[in-house]
Length: 385
Image (cartoon, rainbow, N blue to C red; front, side, top):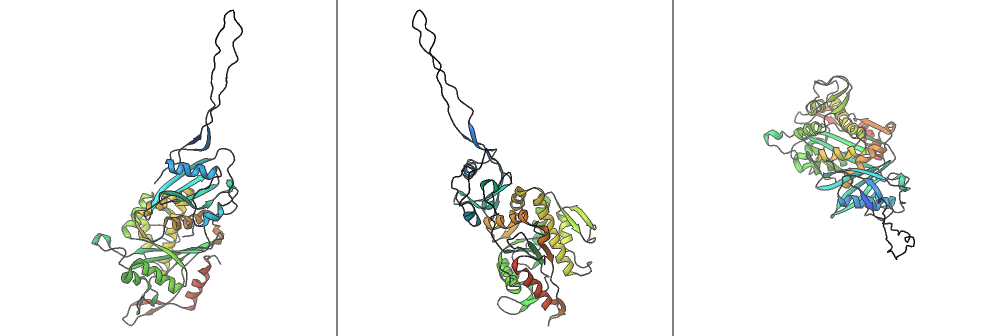
């Protein structure tokens, strides 16, 4: 994906600060006989600290503290960013979308140009990242250079195969440089590399030996990239995820199965076969890996079109169909770079390699200096050069 890349909704509820104003009437005019005085009290309408609707009391209290200049729990890049945050002017309107990622509750809150990424930690809502121009915070707080591995399993789930124990047929590394740039690098599955524990096999074989963690570790070793974590899905989960999002738009460089050349809205089934097909493509596995990146781009474009809260929709939807070691904090702060990225600073490449044969007559790809040069270029998180 181009990182235009990386959620089950809950929305903020109103919080009102009560101010009671009282007053007394004047004494009555003198009369022939004494008359008691009367008192009347009036009250002004409550003045809200923030204007919002529909969210839990806990998130409401969290947002109120944030925008009235009080301390809120923080973690990661948000800690330094919010240390000297100012109180907002006026009455901010705050909305949000909540969801679940890897067994953790999270929320994406927006107010004007502000975005707050929050995770519930030990029953306490905690700001983990975002950007807050209305609070005097100049820069986005999302962390620096990072790489995440996205994998598609070859498991036949209908036959009872586990997605964590079969080959990783799709390998895509998504990176950000922490400066508004990034990239997507497809890894051909037939790269012939030394496996964990010794011996050589195709790079996608490591998951059959040690699961997704072993696959991620091998990719990190081969590419010399610091892989922060992985997200793994299977045939069925991939299709269901896209269908639940309502489909995505793919910009196909050529006709691939039922997907014509150009921009087209596709459902999960057609997106899956667009990402899976290789035999009819001119460059085989290289073209397939590139098309997998284009599919990720389509998912990212969905999130962008929906605004920052679209990130919450994508994560919450994907959560039901993936296996991952990324925490909610990691997923949120990484995915939110999609809204802080300059498209001119984002690259999409698949490194070339030489065709060959293994000793047991498998068709393989041998890593070359050109392959390694792409790996090296991506170490800073940017492939636009």
